[in-house]
Image 1 (cartoon, helix red, strand yellow):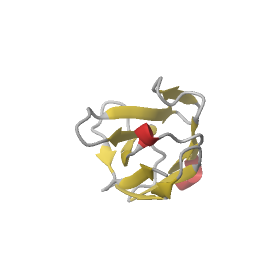
Image 2 (cartoon, one colour):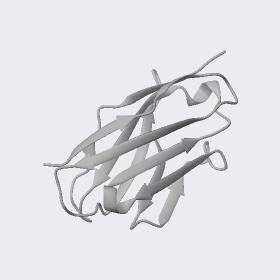
Image 3 (tube, helix red, strand yellow):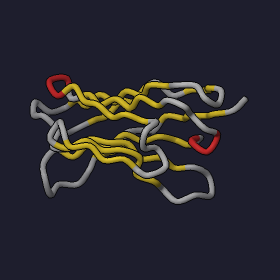
Image 4 (cartoon, helix red, strand yellow):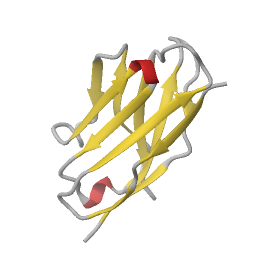
Length: 117
């Protein structure tokens, strides 16, 4: 069974940076896709970034140009580099992974990101 462990959240001032990591375990296969979504209180869940096949990336409009998703395929680890953070980026960030096309995603436990002065 695939398990995801996230790390890297915390408190940062506006304009600062954070790097989130998510490591998948429980499988010897490379993930078909991995990514991040976030959930802020009172707001809809938002898909922030995804990476498919190791090279195809997608970002929400709200983070384009500020966030970068990358992946270490042999380690089944995905990273989210977040720069120029804004207070509106405050949310719980969840990692997800899809083992094969057509299968249900696995979700991590979430990591809190707070952007505040």
